Image (cartoon, rainbow, N blue to C red; front, side):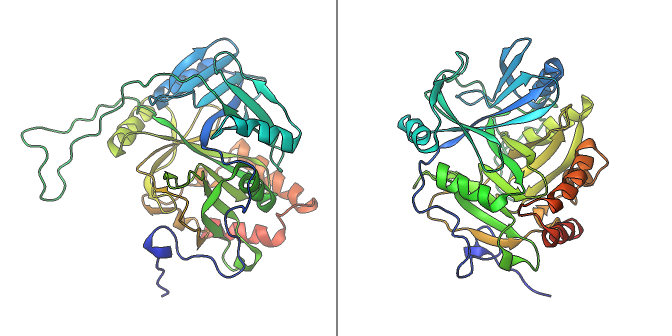
Length: 376
């Protein structure tokens, strides 16, 4: 049986082969600092607000037509939800490193810098990635002050006693979301879209995945972080995967620790919400994870203890398999893999038929590779 080591004993199976994608742009337009917020459209904002409170968000604005949700760390809201006739993901918003970067993007890409709504403050520039997804970059936002966080429990580890004559009783209550961590997107123009984020927003790849037997055709998924120089950043702020349709996959929100995550999950179950997959620990990124479906079917993740890399680390490369999604935990569920009989699953099947008829990167060989992922 083949033994798999790690890339520099850090984060993946191995490094790049000669001539493979370098995972970064030589001369990006700008370098964004972080993911600011995500925007959604939903018909039932009251239902969205109920789930949000159970999941651990704090509303900063709730009107008939708009809902803003924040974590407990200081900063802007991490979700903006607008009322609309159907549920839809409206796109990500990134935080510029410098306000002047907005003008750089606007001039280079034929857009313009515009003031944001009073509740958000600051300025933004609207762009579109090659998949057609609206992307916004912002600066000068209003910042909400920090709120009380969930204090991590004191652990006895091995023979090291840090807690004596005291018990552990984490309450079953909403895990307090601290911040937005990352968003995962799917594109049938994966390579073109990946390169756009690297060239335009200056992001860099932490890990590449490829379909078994198809490495010579290039990667099919990338975990992408912000380039903050010597300052460590989340292993991935954005993840991008090849697929038959252009769509949102999931988004992830940091909580204090595994007890907050697990007890918060028990609270969500008691409230009648649906766990998609968890609890486990990922390989790429190392996060402890727990995935849930919101009332509109969107997949959202609680996570804790993720990796942070500076800009010196080169991308790792590994085969893409369902069993390779976690170091420990239950097998990836049918719901998480998109194999359960949901509306979104049927839409994905229809998308396969369309993608195979149209000009894009998702062809029959890639379909065979994707099928193998679900079986491996």
